[in-house]
Image 1: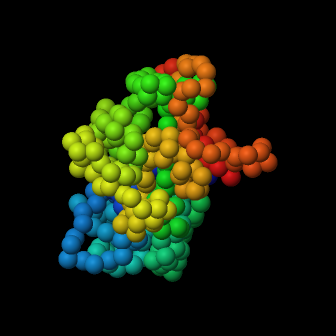
Image 2 (image 1 turned 90 degrees about the horizontal axis):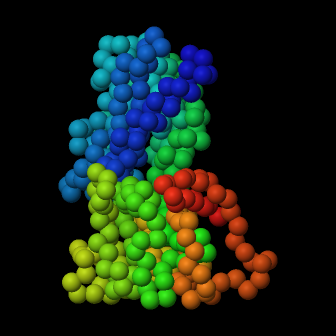
Image 3 (image 1 turned 30 degrees about the horizontal axis):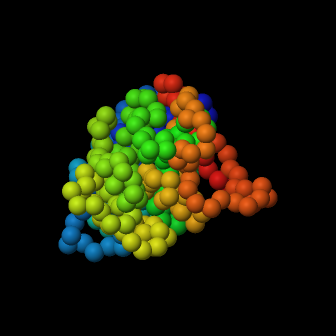
Length: 347
């Protein structure tokens, strides 16, 4: 295979992985394709996660958990390829597992299939994998190349990779603002700052997130349900910082009254890969000051509220001098109808 072919087929595997994004967590959303004679002869994505109360495992490690159809992405791709896998090349977005737990190792199936070459985008940071899968394949005489399309795969699997490296969920802060940085008018009204396309995008992020949290003030003022609409995806686990008002639409939800850092660690221990924070400004400001945000997602509308009496993006005390400003980079800028989505990661 040429480098161009490897790039093309790994891009196909990454696209296949998107099929698993809404349902595989806390397993990683992996995609795999089998290529024989320059054609894809089999593909597979991680199956839906299914818990088993009779098996007591650390919640930090779910890569080897049972999928609803009993297979991982690599296994599904090999099954689809059948005998055509013999002598073929397997492309997978994440290193195949080599440990035996609730399923057999993917490396065993790959070796038995007769695949002669495996191309891997990312080495799995899960301490039970972490290069062991690649080593097992090479020991069996299979050629293995790693790092193909690594930037795209790393972006796609960012929440999973972050969780495995830190034990904490990947925290997204989402806010919608006017061009002059206001998220609500002085009377508290905020519907709607952005247009329909931006709001649909928010629902996609909700569906991708294992949990979502807001402050109790937002629940009292906006009474959000925090459910997924506009896209076909699962509802996230809902958490309210503070007391939940009786009859609130967010129910069923959990109330959290302890330190925010404690909540983040607790969710990580429970296998939450991605937490979406939807505000309001008080909660957003507090999480920002405590350094708990991994990615800022700001939807900016082509509108200006004017004045300084509207609600700002972040409430609370800011920096005292420009020497203390927090800088980062825009990792993504997306036009959504008339609005712009800005993705910021601080340095």
